[in-house]
Length: 138
Figure 1 (cartoon, rainbow, N blue to C red):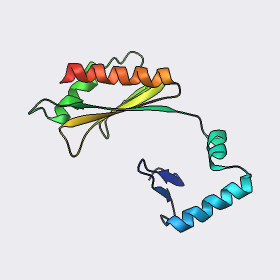
Figure 2: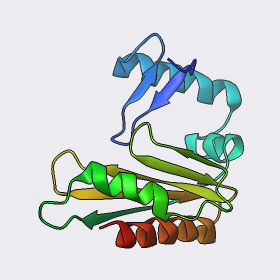
Figure 3: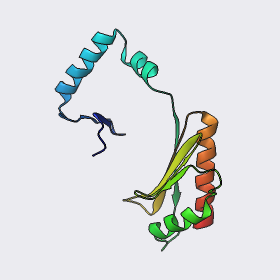
Figure 4: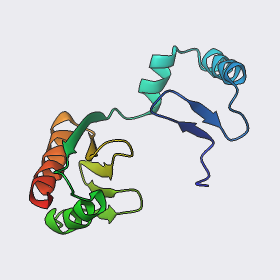
């Protein structure tokens, strides 16, 4: 779909474009680590930037529809320094120093907030913007 060769799921699944099998993935990873001469943590730290994450949530008042909250949120968040806003799966706003995604829970009357930044301060700023927008939207 997006051309990626490897996909990682939050719950721990790893997907290669040609396999989902655990033993196959373990073999591929062992080969990579052997060729690179690094431990897994060394390989990850050498290859990817570090990001900091906050997971938050806001319980919705009785009768409040999640989609109505998300629609209002798009109007309430400050757009002056947002780089991009997308609403394909909730409301995601990208900033220079991080991003946040607010999406409806599929099992509870709440919205979930995921914020991430390259610095601890960046992720906190993004989470604060999202939560303040939600306070105005509910």
